[in-house]
Amino acid sequence: MTDSDASASRSAAPEVRFALSAAAFEIAPLRAGLLSDQAGAYASFEGWVRDHHGGRAVLGLRYESYAELALSEGEKVLAEARERFAIVDARCVHRVGDLAIGELAVWVGVSAAHRDAAFAACRYIIDETKARVPIWKHERYADGEADWLHPLPPAAGA
Image 1 (cartoon, rainbow, N blue to C red):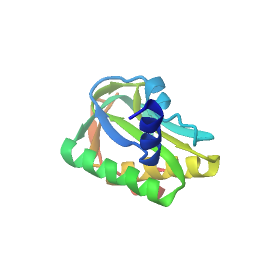
Image 2: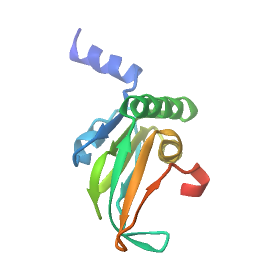
Image 3: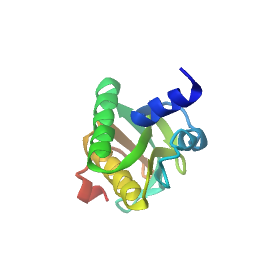
């Protein structure tokens, strides 16, 4: 098989990948993995840890997941996006473990022939990930309290 045959084979079956990461990760290699001659558009979403929630000062948070189920459901979300939207490829990485204010918590990247599909698929992936993938957030507040926050329906978490 030549390099061009391998490239054509990869293009015919877009890679769709959902991952959990216990450590900070670089976006550049993930974005590079979405590059394709078929794609004329790229859309992404980055979710960062913010310093407030519900009027309370947040010191940091911890994400926990049921990894096997989270990976399976995350892959389903990405497969659904590929079926619903005319995209070339999509990936999502969600952090687990302790995160500080300002850290990257979740990243979604989508490549497509056109921007409308890339934007729509990106929005779909983050909304469905937040609603369905079993990842739980434990926020620590400045007042010494902490709360577990559960996934929200897409409209409520938008």
